Length: 383
Image 1: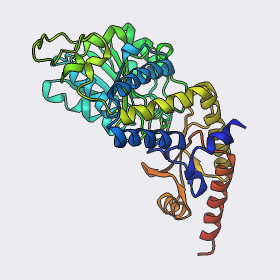
Image 2 (image 1 turned 30 degrees about the vertical axis):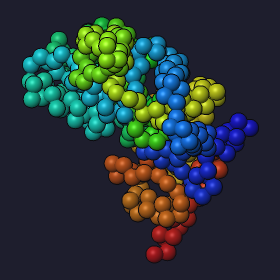
Image 3 (image 1 turned 90 degrees about the vertical axis):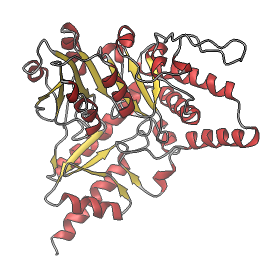
Image 4 (image 1 turned 180 degrees about the vertical axis):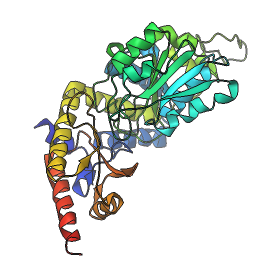
């Protein structure tokens, strides 16, 4: 079976029930192997920079294929937050412009916009309902001065998926940029930027793309790339990289019209080598199959939690489900810590236990998880 073969790539399964991919990944063998190979080459003969640069090109093409973008629309960053800051600082805002946020956003998709208030930019808030931003509520908040709607594809808690397609379609008709934090989506669901119609999207590699921290992806729709002014530039940001031979140095500031304009200096070559390996692995499975599998696990856990009378905050059916399931009890923090002592890794977020699945999880993980919750509840009755 394909999923058991996938599971074998993740040694963490030998000792833990790992249900915290929404925070960070456990590295798979296919990436630790490629990382060791890279390090060995650099140790032995300092590595080959031409090989590294070619790998960056290949990775850009593969990432673009994965999310249905063009390679020219992809820039590499350190993380989601850097991508969001590139966008927020690159848009030519005027005093009186406004940006629409919601209270379920990760703080890093709030601070980068709040930082613009000193320029006279207004922050507006749309209230989420049932863990989601609804288009009807958004329409009540935007006006002719709205420049950006920033929101998550899947929010980090309770883990609801927003209807980006309808929101992006509305925003485009009103010349409003849609800026998406997709870190809880890319790698767990089939993200198609063209189908969704979003303008800009940011994600990081250290979660469902299975690479160490320090690698991020920024997508900007081709027609908007030159709308975003790069705050920093370097040789790599130019249309044609400046020669550094002493007899032919020129310094014409000729910034490229591709998303590479947002990349400066040397890349995280090691991180991008690992990212390329992950993207190839996921595309080898097929993102449609990945999403289908994640939703199977979501259903299995949700059904069993409800059966035990546990309060589930995440959507229990329909379009808005994701790789994240959040729930609470009358002593959530104590249960979280009790599970951790028994090698079950989840996360404590907004007074809930947040479970987040990866392609390495299976129904046995969930059955063991539910069994431990029953054990915990039984032990409480005798205290």
